[in-house]
Length: 347
Image 1 (cartoon, one colour):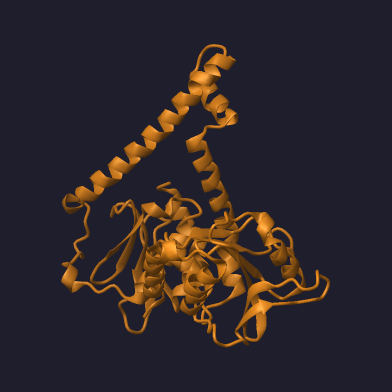
Image 2 (cartoon, one colour):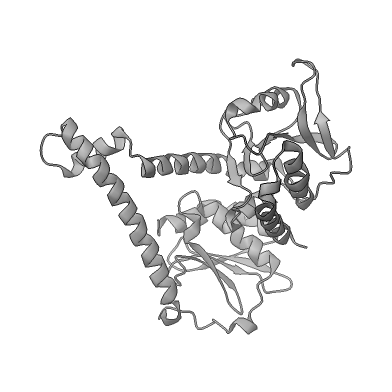
């Protein structure tokens, strides 16, 4: 079973079992350990998955973290699990902060089984950041998130590879949170900034209060309009006059695991400048296209992976496609700047 299939099975199981996962121990067994298995770590090998991990050097005696994950015999990931009824907060990560400083771990995970927060030391070496660079709900795992989680698999674990996109992920996550807050309750700063741009008179307190409701309504209407446009575009897909002549019937095309990995890699790279939900995969006989807005006129990259011996990556940051040779899917990251440059054209 592939990593994606294991994640899908875990998501479905978590949804079905949620009402029965009432304790910390229950979520450890049913969710945490199962995710570790999907990531290729053996929870039955105490040399690899160390439960109730302790490190007494320079910290409070008797404190433990729930699990330490060892890669090549070195503590690499720390995991602290909380009650499923507890909303995660940085104050719940005190043990992780202390253990992060006195072990070789580069990553720390705080979870209640459903909400997950992954930290590293982007701000200051050997000191765990206050803000996670990746956070997610176990019941909502999309392709871009699956790509990021896949980097933590034992066979793929590479600190530099994970950190390469961690900084962007950290701030994208924070910005999304801020944006959601603004959607629910527009801040005074946003109301003043937008209101003063369109209101000709004196922006008094009464006008400010009026515009607070108007701005919230406007934002929601814009989002609804974008959603409707996307649905309309999907319905009109079969009439797309820009479709490639190379397109074939579904039975003629087989999407390979490498193409899926390449698609997720492109999504993860472009996510720094464009909404990942706007990125689609359209597989053809000779190549796999990665498109923005599912539109052939907006190519992000092409994955020429169908050859048994040679792989090429098609780039579109210039006037025409440029094919560059790559040896492995992970080599796509070497062209991250050029992929983001293409994405910026459609942002």
